Image (cartoon, rainbow, N blue to C red):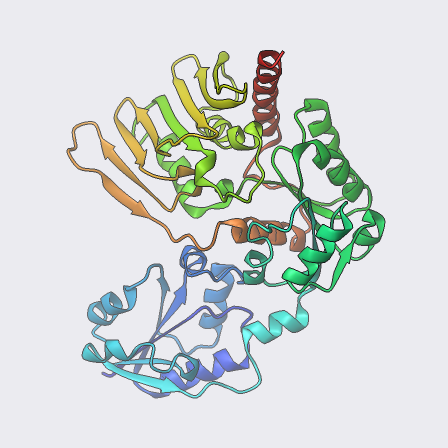
Length: 441
């Protein structure tokens, strides 16, 4: 019996998919079809897949060509599948020609001509609603906000607004945008989605006006240090059926989602301690960040791990000779756990996070705020097990993809950061800011 295997995403199932399966079946007696899993698609940077894995598998099944359907879940799985199922020939579309020649040592590799003038990408472009995206900025620095959304279908960067006409013009020219605006009303009329990346003091007014104009909003966090303003904008977004996102990209990384699961599912026992550090020196020098912009990362992460019911917090500040805060140590006390976060503004810190439980620990050895991997070990184990996940770009594309999924499904609340978690984070940030102001007197 001649066994054939083929792989694909099979998103928005179309005639081209049907034809490749039909011809693959004709290559042998038994056809195995590998359908890419959702996590694997995400890891490869395929952020535009519309159909669920269940739908894609069902569409393949309904053709009647597949004798066995499997899920492709990781890079390198094809070799294992070929060996496991004793495959004679791998069949793949000609658009992948040459990419799988290395598998010829395991089985025959055959590239089939794809059906012309049809593809999932083309269908997405023709059928999907495209949203116009615009940036509100104080500087010409974009923080990859121009390039990152290009990896997500259905969104196109159109324009920029700045209160400074020269900045708007320079930004527009530098990134070859359609329009640069100095009038916020005109800018809002030109777009569907706004990204507010200004200094913290101006974020609230820009966000509120955008929401009042029924625009979807992403904003650098925090967009306010007042709980009542946070609540006001959250309710305004819900009232106008639009989404409001805090630009904390960490929350949208696959590795962070897995980290939360490992930490909170009793794999290392009850959590008793979190230690982490973060420094402004690890971020782009062009990025304007005040102390609260930096502090939101560890505070939000601690809240996600230990919850909102902290008993008390304290903050120790260190200043330089000209009275600027250069270092802070934040301490959180819970009923049965503690957390310490070191924040450096103009000093070097290691950027490590360690999570300790009663039965083990988790370690992120570097730049935990853009985690791509972490290590975990149980109490009596000598060596850590490493868990690695793909991270493309600076992570902003994953936030944009999450937002687009909500918009397309007519939902307006992401579960990555719940309302009470945001309010607790802002409450702590506000207390820190008050301490800084008090120290400056």
